Amino acid sequence: MSLIDDLIAGVDYPDAVVRDVRVGVGWTAVLSARCGVAKTYGIHSTQHVRIPGAGELIGLPAIEMAQFARSLNQLEASLGVAALNSMIEPKGEIGANAMDLFKEKLRGKRAVMVGRFPVEIRELVEAATDFWILELNPALIDESERVLPVTAAPSVLSTAEVVALTGSTLVTQSLEYYLSLCRNAYTIVLGPSTPLSEVLFRYGADVVAGIEVVNPDAVLAVISQGGGRMHPSAFGKTIRYRMLTAPTTGE
Image (cartoon, rainbow, N blue to C red):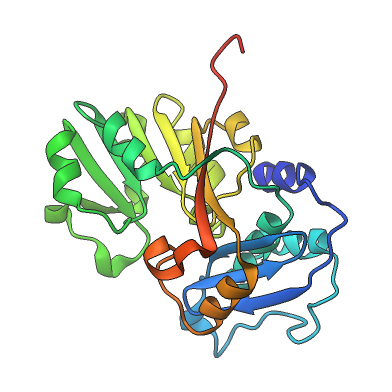
């Protein structure tokens, strides 16, 4: 897992200590130097899967908790990615909407969305010359709606020209794999789970877009109370978008 290794090695606050932890039905949050979030996975299996040390996590070095990102226990991996994000100083353009950039870039191109984002799909299908969605959730797969299983990734991504890739694939430990398949595409990694780290540029990302938590107490409260979509419509001014763009050759 060299991507996870490099992300952990590149954090801005390696000496940060965990001050709070919330594992909600939609999102997981860790407060250390900053508040980091990640998509919560593994909820369906919580009767059989536990986070080791639950109840005693506050006070741990955040760098130690970030190692959980390697875990096959998806609840634990969610916690690890949130801890990783809590040690990264937010950077990049404030307020930029990466999905708007994706819509702009895909016009007249072969485009793929990895992860079913909550946007109007018909608009994207009509703008692109070819458009597909790769989705992990089998309940959402429907070829007539342009949604394919993630097993189609090698063939679909190899011909894509523009790709929007959900940062939550870091939790499922597939981000590095997907990036390796997108070498010929303009690739945007986006979503609240996305580390705002230049490390992702070395793995093929062209744009990295995540969130900055500006009011940790409010975000922790919403997550604890079952908050859903991590969007200003639900979280208001407690979060804001950030977007980093890879330097062009020669810079």
